[in-house]
Length: 367
Ligand code: MG
Ligand code: ZN
Image (cartoon, rainbow, N blue to C red):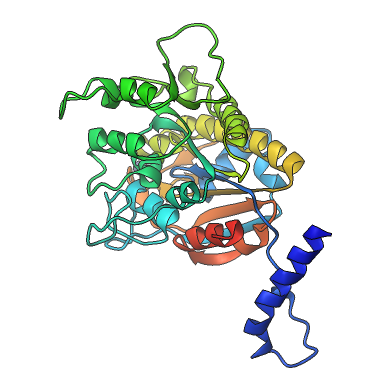
């Protein structure tokens, strides 16, 4: 009954906007209120263009978890100062809804700090988390928590994890926390003092997370290993993040998961590297979709910040054997895909700017 009343209230609120234009009796599908979303899980494949996605799928017996998404769209990833974006400007646009210059972390073209979707979520009492396969201070995760003029200042970015209200994070870059050169702080210890359960790759045995505590795990001193070197934490840590964040707040959570190294395979012009990282990311997407399908109140969005390598699948390729070629060792300007599953997913169909993802996430969360 309570649910019904909320529903009709939402219809009433949205009706006046359309009653101005639409003649009486005209069916207006757009007045359907957006279903209430409690949790948002945003997965970013860094450098994941359509070719990267295709290569992963064709390599993996022509199968992909992405086939489970009912909604797909395309977004325009260019930066404010360059048609070719980098990961900093790309992630800042997704995290804040504002296009900025390449290298900018959570700041606009005038270096003014922007509010990120994670900060908006934290302000409203939602739990938040980040799980990545790069350093945790690399551009993509950084754009969700930090406000720094230059992405290379990873020690400065690390200090933002102490200022932030983030509840869970996993990634490399331990060095930027406990072996700092720009000051004498030990942020690893400071995280513990702030109530985090902190652990890292040097510890053996299983780590049992305390559901009452915030959680930080450093997967490497700097960059975590490749999948081909034995890295396998992206899927299990994403599931752990979901379990932990669910217990941190009754209001819901925002989680960003990044397949960081798809991009690195592109920069290296190494098709096998791209494919193995795509398969790992795909597996993670599948686990997240399993949770969302059972949960019913979680919106899952998967997108990229840009394409890397001008990657193409050339003749001579077969299922299970990809002949990849490249036009550059840098990023390209091609449109990148967006996939959505769960309540509010319909909003993500179409062709739009990367900044629209921020607005759509805010809309579904009722911010
Ligand atoms: Mg990245
Ligand atoms: Zn890159």
